[in-house]
Image (tube, rainbow, N blue to C red; front, side):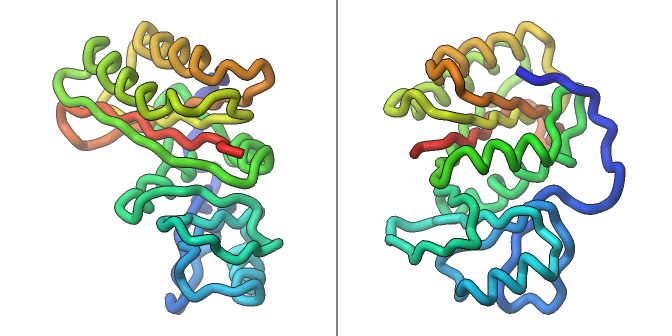
Length: 208
């Protein structure tokens, strides 16, 4: 588990951004995300990567189709259409606003460890105390229990206030027990939400 102080934006470049084929201006980002069933091809993605100066391109797969394998795409994350913004927000680690955080290098290292990733999330409502954290964590492990021996996982925790160490330890113990692989890379990030009385867990893990 990696802890670091969040010294918020050293510059204004977001860690991750979502791009659509027909937008006129491409803002720069370290991780360029695109939806795989949009009208992209290898050349268009190559030009996108050059324009935004992205270090890595990530495809978001929102269906069950076998999409053409593109050499320029370093990782594919499977999610539901309504989860696209959640995935991009999770990858944008520069938005982390509490004392637990990771940086873009960590995210890239994780994405380079696999090719196919899965996104899952859970939430619980109520005063954000240990019971609420336990409820959301229990739901999360229920979604993850069909998988095992993953090589890497990224856990985002989101609440209106900083979590106490007891809650952080509970989440990390549950994740590390689930992952089981001795050499798994596990990262945690904490960020804030304006939603009152809500706690969210958002996870990306390697499934191949």
